[in-house]
Length: 451
Image 1 (cartoon, rainbow, N blue to C red):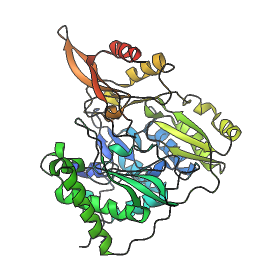
Image 2 (cartoon, helix red, strand yellow):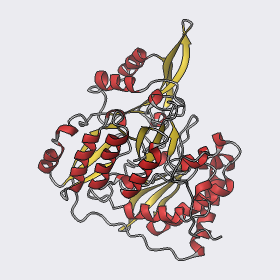
Image 3 (cartoon, rainbow, N blue to C red):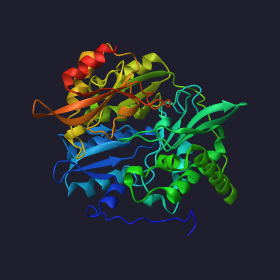
Image 4 (spheres, helix red, strand yellow):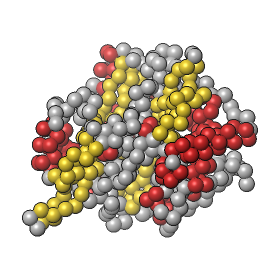
């Protein structure tokens, strides 16, 4: 079998797979509530059509009317509280909308994230075609659905790196050299309970080498990833085991092999001819999106004067060519709650849904939003995670909170460890421990004292 041999992965369409690994490949995770499922949906590059927004709203109204859509930190959407019987029907409806959940979870290539400003703002080349090329190449690879662990790729269209390159297995940050677009390539970063940011492979990679590098990284990962210990099974653990210098040399050698095996298509990065410079960021508290708001976003997506992108931080970006058009667009009743906020305040679902969570997260996030939101610096990131895995990107936040179960005065309480000073995934900086085992009230005081 060659690396590019087409493959068919057979999944039951009439029932949830009994094997947890196969269920995850369908984007399914069991919730902490018995016989309830979370269905994750990939949104490549954060771009949805108007019909897709409305179709998602319809799914929620029909199947989970008491539970909103949920945005993730990787431009995915999640549908929660589904029963065993509802899951196949929802997957069928997603397919009719041109959406897929295959690879949204599991030990495979996850959703490729792309800067919301890609192909929209001046100086930000359109990276969606390249992301689609990379996805096609990797999904044709023979081992893509049985990697040692998940594999995450991000593409940033701006030097600021708003697709969080330093916390991905592979990341591309667009930049010019000699009039041509290429990439700064960063590899082997990941979060989790023991996070580590990536390392730079090269400060300039030609655009035509991006897809070959992605395949080379996956091939190296498949060959050298640890399949016996999931806690040390990411690409960055290969790097740590080999050492940075040996790892990077091995990856460069693999890239040379991949490039020599066949001719690769030319990748052209184009800037928008008519940029959309007016911009609003609609913050969705705790990532929740009601179906009426999804309908309104669908209407905005239909408007040729606008561009709508799902972000990576519980936000939806709305772009227009001028401020008047932008303000008229977002002045809709269902979009009144997702208002612009000074700071980014993220919370994972916590014990609301997640079986691994130790604490409830959303109430604390609401308190921070309400009591400290006006005092937090513009653009600051506060991330609240329900366990040490830090799914809300706690480890790279300005203020990161990691849930822990502890006791005080003989009573079990929910508490948080506080970390500060992270680079938001846009730099290599990890947040550092500041205080431990804080109650909600103590968290508010500790953050306020640092403002």
